[in-house]
Length: 412
Image 1 (cartoon, rainbow, N blue to C red):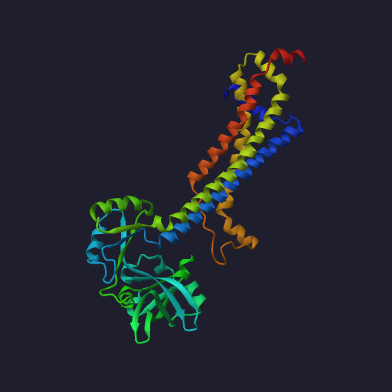
Image 2 (cartoon, rainbow, N blue to C red):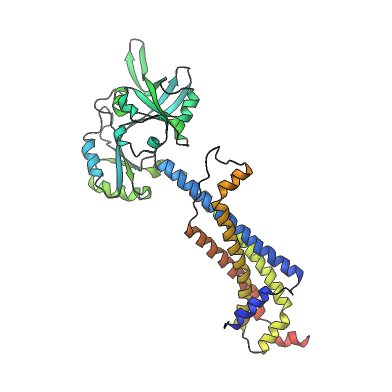
């Protein structure tokens, strides 16, 4: 089969075993370094993507993508007027997936034992919350119990453990920012609720969020109506929230809109920055390994001075010499990237099995490590590693092309 002469000679040089042991040693460890760097980068990035995806599922599945409120009611003594009509209108937007009514306030929760906790009360209507991630994360009871049982509350497992309470037990919800006058003076509004459900999402909301029915929330807040103060909008793509708000403001300018970016944007920005830093650090491993190719090729160039001179006298031009050593360096990089990709993909797809074999549980017993191995990430890593290998070959190849045949052959 026909092969370009530069490629053929570079391939022969890469296969040659006659070079000095030290050159072979450096070449071997440059390949091993690329293997480790590529494998580590594929594994870590896949785990980071998996954790980010799981975080999006848990956080953005619970946190509303957009909240609509009527700021024209400063005292909040009545529910959002005509929210049913507004909900139907919002659902007509092509990017809106679900719209649910909400009452929200901060409160203290107290168990009969005296244990206290600071929580965020969300007054909901269970019939609109079938898509809610809490609905699929119930350990006992259900969200529907809020409709079936008066003055009932659904809390997270972490909060239940903190208060040492269980299903059917009583807790007291107190609104520290809302008071009433009594014969004993001014006291905070409070009411006893019965625990009718316990959920577990596996995040901090398990300890800080409680659900009640909005109509009982209205009674707790001494409000008229069904207690709906806001509407929560869930989109088919949470990251299009800003665009949707712009479009909704043009049509419903009398309402105030808050996106998830304002409450959770810093969290996702931190995760993204951490992911980028991991990319940078692990890419430096590949870069160091790739630039070991420079050392190996420089020594090969010195060792092959005579052969380079002979090739030049036979008519091979400088560009042909450059191609020889670029080929040799890229072949070393190719082997490192190929083996590293195979090792990294294998580790990524079998992380849980490997950790189970070693008896290691990173997320606790019974929880598997979320992993997301994507073709785009793998291709990006392969391209980056090969690009680094290519750049590493340029200096030695250029130095080889500067060889003066007359000077070298004079001493042969």
